Image 1 (cartoon, rainbow, N blue to C red):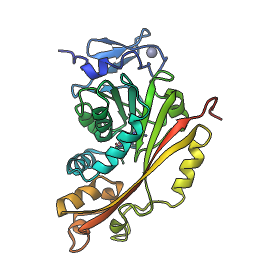
Image 2 (cartoon, rainbow, N blue to C red):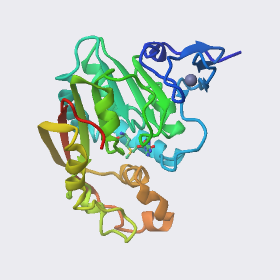
Image 3 (cartoon, rainbow, N blue to C red):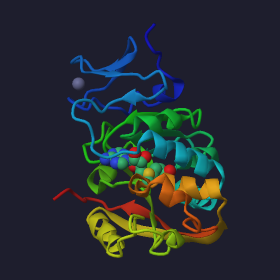
Length: 288
Ligand SMILES: C[S@@+](CC[C@H](N)C(=O)[O-])C[C@H]1O[C@@H](n2cnc3c(N)ncnc32)[C@H](O)[C@@H]1O
Ligand SMILES: [Zn+2]
């Protein structure tokens, strides 16, 4: 039996575009198809595979996604989720549209949709394992495989809010898909984020101090910051929570079980420190 189109994805049919020819897509026998017969399979887990051909080189693997799911379920990042929801809700009208790029398990998208009872959401990510969770995270959240570095399979000006939480960015495409009244919400770590985890081993990933400047430079031709919230607090870590916090980062790939379980390797508390900024799109901005 062909996989049927889930209701959340149906809400997006008017806004999705064929990645190959930009035509509209229609459901047809377990797939979405354009008039030129370019075909994109619906996964039985509820997302649509729009990313075909060459595989993206980045994206979280199954172990990282499981760790992220468990960690986020503890509520430790709830203050970040609330900040994202506040910043996005300001820009999204009652029947508005939210796109979460590099959505992972869809935790932040669900938080925004909870605040906006009439809105629809779409999560994009390269990781099919993450999208299995994202496709189920909220009844109004759809999910699709996509690589942020390629032109998005979405209509111009379709989004009231674009979320980018700890994820790669594509300012040109963010600008193209946002309505003039829309907002881009970007969350990124400050130099203090998870500082206690650093220095615990040479492999634990650090925050590059020049990253903030690079972000502002990359966004400047397209966006102007309107509001920034600093979210910073210290939270206690049980051992499983600490293991998941490391496990959901790329650091996990470099650390063996012996490192992780060594006495005193993982701290019992950690600083969470991020900046969440809402950006307004600049009129007339163009890709160089
Ligand atoms: C640090 S995680 C953040 C996930 C989610 N926003 C969150 O905070 O829970 C980064 C996410 O970006 C995704 N990702 C990495 N490279 C990507 C790409 N080129 N295009 C789309 N998603 C990508 C990963 O699979 C992962 O889900
Ligand atoms: Zn097509």
